[in-house]
Amino acid sequence: MNLVYLTSPKGGVGRTTLTANLAFALQRLGHQVVVLDLDVQNSLRLHMGLSVAEHRGVVAQSQHNSDWREHIIETPSGVGLLPYGQATKAQREGFNTLLRQEPDFLEHRLGSLLHQPGCITLVDLPTGPSSGLDAVKRMDGLGVVVLMADGCSAATMPLVGQDHYLGAEAGKRALYIINQIYIRSRLNRDCAEFFENRLGSALLGRVHRDEAIPEATASLQSIFEYAPTSAVIQDLEDIARSISRMLPDAYGHDSMKFSLR
Ligand SMILES: Nc1ncnc2c1ncn2[C@@H]1O[C@H](COP(=O)(O)OP(=O)(O)OP(=O)(O)O)[C@@H](O)[C@H]1O
Ligand SMILES: [Mg+2]
Image (cartoon, rainbow, N blue to C red; front, top):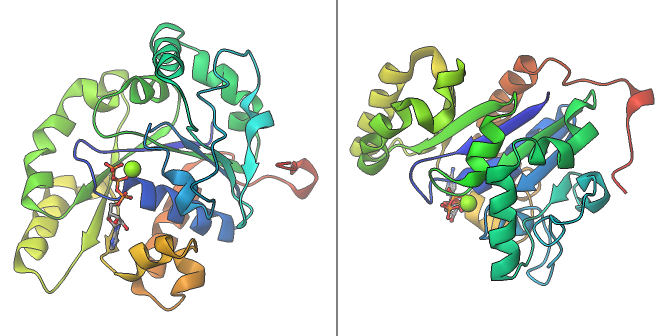
């Protein structure tokens, strides 16, 4: 199952930004990539180059017993997007109930997408524990915790270490990305070093801070288009290569490729 989900106990650390940019990096490695937004903020669509007027999404569809492949929106980069979408309070509550009460809900809706050779599904989650996190944890995916090299993220490490947070009870091992590394800041350097020592081989990668990242988002472009010489590109490519190596069926055969339309 080629599923990767990004979580963090602290908000604003860059989960959505990394979900989008890792999707682009994985696509550049030759994978087909679909991103799923399980956060009510519904902001992944903006990172994927869609407009704020784009209201379609999976939550409004969740009561229908459909395969979500039908709802994939092909974005300008070619990465497929399943947005959270605009939803009423009743639809949001109904969606959370399905995530909580139907153990196989997500797996059934994502269906064949998860087992399509060559296709990787990346999931953007809300901050901290959520019904979405519980639902993805039940599947056989790769859990990635995003940390920022600051004192507040360092203070959340014991929370991440708790067994229930990422499914350690099921023998799963979380991997970590330290985002927004800023070498000119002493505190940032010290925090990054603290994480590196603590995480050891669980550290999936490091991503530098670069103003080009928010600028790229504001201009509805990927960092690969907006600032192709940024140091962040190398960071993202290194992480994408590691993810690609870790997933069992991450490369498909051309004949097995499917159209996102
Ligand atoms: N490596 C980076 N360099 C510079 N800015 C970054 C980097 N990563 C993320 N950002 C910026 O940090 C801010 C927060 O990012 P983002 O919205 O992706 O975080 P999040 O963890 O998804 O937040 P939320 O908890 O609101 O869902 C954004 O303005 C984004 O552009
Ligand atoms: Mg987010």
